[in-house]
Structure formats: C-alpha cells, structure tokens
Length: 597
Image (cartoon, rainbow, N blue to C red; front, side, top):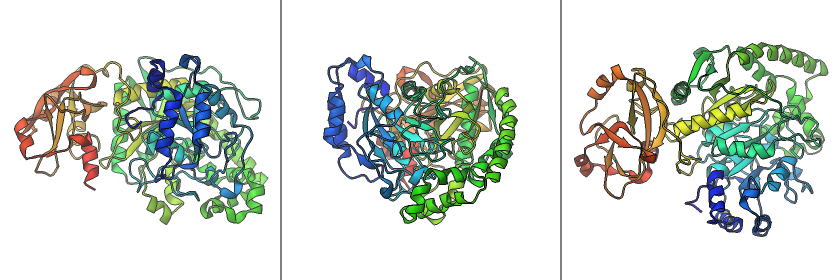
C-alpha cells in the first residue's frame, strides 16, 4: 500500500491490468487506517465489513464500465452518507441519514468507494482546521502547522494517500486553503453545478461542494461524475457553455504589488512571483488588474449580513443547545442575530454594484491568478488568537461565491522548511473546463510530488517550451525558489520552467562549508535515486556571468531528468563526496533543510 499511488489514473491502470481488485484495495486501506489517527483526520471510519460491501459490489464488473471503479474517497462530515453519522463537527448535532447526499450517491453509482467521514471546523465555520471538538487537524507536512479549513480532514486524508480524492465544502475558501497547505488540487465549482442536497448548510445561497485531488486530471474525473442538475436542490443549476482558454497564448490577471498581501511571509511572496513566471512560460500574458472590488466583496461576507444566513442554518439547534458549540464558532454565528432586513438589502444592493464592477475585469483576461493564502500559521498561533490569523487566510478567497466565480487551487512549490505553497486560478461562472485545463498544464510543468507522499506525479508529456534567447539550467540547492541564492537567477531575468526530478542515477550530498549551505549532485553507476530539481530559464547573455560565479567542487554539466531528458545543470565532482554527508534518502534539498529544524 505504501508503494502504491492512489491517483485515479494509476488505479485505473492497475484495475485494467488485473493487478488489483477493489477487495484487495479496501483490505489494504482498512489495515492502514485501523490504528491511531495522529493527524485527527477522521470522525467516522467505515468498518471492514462496510468497505468490503462496497468492494464486492464491484467485483465481476468491467473496470472500464464505471468511471470511478474502485476509487476510494473521503467525505467531509457535513455531507450525508447513508448509514453513517453526520455531525458537522458537533457531537450533539449528530444524526444518521437514510439517504446519501446527491453528490455522494452519484460517486458511489460511478464505482467510487467511501472510506469515512472527515474532521472539519465545526459547522464549516473557519479556514484553519482547529475549531473541532474532535481535535485540531494536523498539516500533512508538519503537524505543528494548521491543515487549513474548514475541510481539513478531507485535505489531509488525500495528501497522506489514505484516499484518492475527497469531498469538502467551500463557502468562503474551505475547499482551497486546505488544498494549498497540503500540496493538493482544490476545485471550487460554480455555485449550483454540484448539488448541495444532503449537505448541512453554512450559507445556503453560497455553499459549494468542493473536490480535493492529487492532480487536475483527477479533479476533472470527479467533476465529470459529480456535476449535474438536481431537482432536490433549489439552488442547483445546469451547466452552461462558457468561453474556453485560448491556445497557445492566453491573458491572465494579477493584482498589483500594492494589493498583494503576504502578511510578512517573504517566501510565499517569492513563490508567487515564480508561479507567475511559470504561467508566462506556458504562454500567458501578465495583465495587472484592479483588485479593489474583489477585496471589498470579501469584506461583505463576515462584516455584512451574510452572518445571519449562518445563524439561520442552525437557528433551532444553537438556540436549544448553545453550550454544544465550540466557543469560537458560537461567538461568530451568534453575531448573525444582529443584522436587520434593511441591512441585508443594503448589502445586496452593494454586492450588485460590485458584481457589475468586476464584469469588465473578468472580460479583459482569460483567468486571474492570486496566492491561495498569503501565509500559513502554526496551530499554536490560532489557539492564541483564533480570529485575526483566520481572517488573513480568507483575503484571497472570501469573495468568490458572492461574485459567482469558479476557481481551482493548485500546488505551486515549497518553502525552505518544506511547507507547501499554492496559487488559485479563477474566472467567471462555469469556466471549470478552462481552469482545469490550465491547471493540468501548470502541474505538468512544475512536476511537484503528489500530496505529502513524496511520490513523483504520473509521467509527464514533453518538456516545457524554452523561449528563444534563453538557456535552461537545473538547480538543486541554494538557487531554488525561496532559498538564499535564488536572487542570482531572478536578478538576471530568470524564471522557473518546471520543478521535476532527476533520473534515478544520482547520489546527493550536503557539502561542508557555508553559509549558504550547498548540496552536491553526483552521477553514479548504481544505487542512485531521483533527486528534486528546478529547471530555470536564463537569458543567454546572462548565462556566462552566472556560471562564472560557481565555486568548486560545483560546476555546470549535463543532468539527466526523469523520463530521460537532459539539460545543463549543477553537478558536483565525485571527490567531494568523500567528506560530505550523504542525504540521498531525503530526495531533495528542501527536505534536508527541514530535517535540520
């Protein structure tokens, strides 16, 4: 199980080749999940007998006959699964539905296997994952950090390889922030595209069912099944045609520097700049946009009367069981008693003005890109101040559903401490096909590991195109994004082409000396391993000055990448390995730096 990737394309191949059966898969999953739950992922895990019941229903069927044949998934515990308790993160609220939510039933009918119900910020109120009586969910990469919320357990289950994908909900960013913090794709569909029948509401007029997946292709596969008009849901809408992404060139909007906010996190700022450069390398034209109406809309969500909708959603319960709620959750939702009908109409009129203000902005570009979150926090920081850091996490997310937008959160790199960073692409309603297509191209270019398992993604297509007048150079240490010497690339006009791995023919060493610390990449005839590298594009006229500054025992040579491609890049003379620490097992420089903390 630990050696098996649960991305959907890999499972499909194994089923097609008869190398795996659903029964074998669920037996392995059950054995893996039967022990402790140190990340506080699960509220309810299905029993072995329940899992086998789903698996045996598939045995004897042609794997090609069902689009999600034998694919395991998790369900946020505010979404109904027949026969399993729904708590919304509040034990006293629990009930056991006889009927699954429409979206869950569609997935099961397509062959997917539910594994259990996941932890969340109580009543889906929060973006951090700490507001749960079942325990604060842990980040998949560093348990001292938040997982993001409110769909925290669904994200971490996917990142840790316990399921192939998971359902969350997204009213204000709950399907995107956890994706960013756990190196996942997070799809927030257009309101009404996926039914919310059988979902405990937060704000019924705004709620969306979201998808956490390892790749954009996986998210597309799930959406293909999950989407569809549902008469059970009064807010359901059929999909309508929307403009596609132009090829090969496209225009993407970026807020000006003065409107970007990273809350002091310089690494996230550098990673965002690199992601923008990657979009340019994919054929995008950067267009600066005015972000003001989006930010003003975001403030309406929690500073306006929409809090009253959260109060109405559980009014009977909160009035009869006020002590059952998490103190922070209760304090937030009880504010919904105050707004008047006049306040609500005033806010709706202002929202209509803002919707009209963003229309020409959306029309002027094909997509808009922002960070998914401007920074990340330790769990202790949220315990000390439950409100202010949480509000920072919604800076780039709170406006989406008020403005009726579609969005996808994408992995976009790691900090020096090994914490994930992500971007969000968004556009007007029903633009999911364009967002998913660009998200797939972006993911194939970066070639980041899937989730938190450290596994490389499925085999990529051709190498990203190198613009005329540039040379490609692979870096594996202090020149990577967010690290001390990256400026030597960026100040010369360099930009990231892709994050990938070497072929499994290298040993990796931490060389003595510094600062800054440097690694050595040495090619070997045997006992090699794939090592994380970044391939940068550098203007030809700047290449000589860059190479001239490289000290021995390092130099520039031919580096073989995954899939057999070669490029110029940093290599190390073999003699230097004798006095260096072998860190090959860590697979990359960022993981080595994280191990020192």
